[in-house]
Image (cartoon, rainbow, N blue to C red; front, side, top):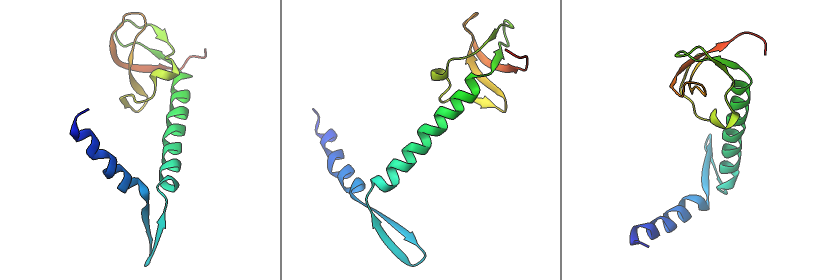
Length: 105
């Protein structure tokens, strides 16, 4: 292992040991997990519900016109513009903006 990898151990130890929370003039020293765990939970839940909402829709490919529903695992971090998402069409294998189909499944 290279030496620079071991430099991060004391740095992370110092960062993750405690956090200072300032509320008005009062300063509270809280453990790192009191901030890290809720933050991670909010990120995971927002990715889950966004992926669920987007994957339940049916989309139309802009290249071949095929209708498809993306998988939830593919919906985590997608480039989007309002309702249009950059998706890979399973039929023509091209990646581009896909419009949602407003027909019932």
